[in-house]
Image (cartoon, rainbow over all chains, first blue to last red; front, side, top):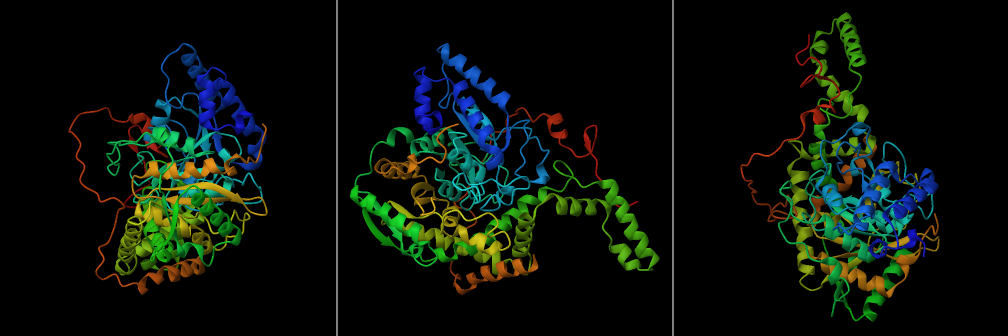
Length: 514
Length: 70
């Protein structure tokens, strides 16, 4: 079996058995990146020398019989939204193109402490805003299954690199579906943990009440392994949950007896692609054959989830992104040119005798802020900042922001009531398989509606996982979403593993050889 | 951009059809409580690492254009 077709769990056992070295594995990943990433553009940066040096060091420690970490020698790709000490962390934005954080995100610290090999930083939609990776300021990642199509987003690079065999493990972030949706569209497994399960310290903020870091990998057991490493309480994140992390990898093997699955009727109606619906129906049958009971449930407010999300997320984003003003770090406009332009404007207005306009002209500092933000942010980020500031403005606060917070509670209550009757909720991740690059770029609302099935989990704070469940007639992957109550990741992973054990979808690989 | 924003605002206005008079707003997915940290001295970030990111600096200070005009 080729290295790149093996799961991270298998690779780890082979390294532990002395049949494989981390250097061999890292080299195989680097070769795959070299062979295919010019086309796929999943990585923003790959540090070959550092990755190989780290692999060498871990191999030596292992050879000497020293204790090594949980992920010892496994390559991990990290979405470029997580701070890495002294290494560029761009959020795929011109605003942070040259930013080198003075610290590691907690998740990055945990990966390093587990002796993972950080292989590179992956592409994303700018500031994690988007579902296609077309909003990256630097490059468009392509779907490994069809390079004319989007890989999904915002963790598009994170999903594509796993699908293409460039890294066995990958870290993404999910604010409204940004792990689950690209996982589904690239045919890999991706989990958004419960809000607060994984530390957000060092995760560059988009919408702080919704953001959550999570794992992507080729199999459920790999996602369980990576979850175990990155989860846990962190004093540096005040919203971090102070709850022990269960042993996900060992409970995984136990099937759930009498599993009760809920199907939300709302999610199987209009708007869901026929092939996606058929794949989900087949998955339901698989669960029934495994002894699960399936009942229809109602999430009556789910049709309001996208509207609610697109008030709350931009509102929080407009506040979080106010920090990018060109003063302390990140991009700053060319101040000399800016000053000349300002002088010119002042002289012209003075020549016209328009003293009122002269008085209203920006001060140099304010002009620097404005121009820095106008030049440093891309169109989608600006759109969301404007939406958010509008929704939070004095006259509209009650009608938009406060209203959305109330509907958020109704959405969360729907889940609470549903989970009184069922253990997990099964539904689609995306309305369709991956769409062609460029199809939705001029229609942001249609892009937002792709998030229909994923945003509710973020609003309610519950965990959700996307698992491969089929392929379209065009050969594009289809994902199935399972959702569970807060902190029931172990149940989610076990339910997902039962399905994976009964099916072969996760074994289908887009590229078989480096 | 104006047309697109108009469409989005029109879409989000559908929330007004819901009666939410008796619903408590939910700002966070987990109910938050105050978190207190022990008042202990610990190492701070390295100043130079932070200042190295400054677009324009003067020793230990950030430089910005004139705040109050000339």
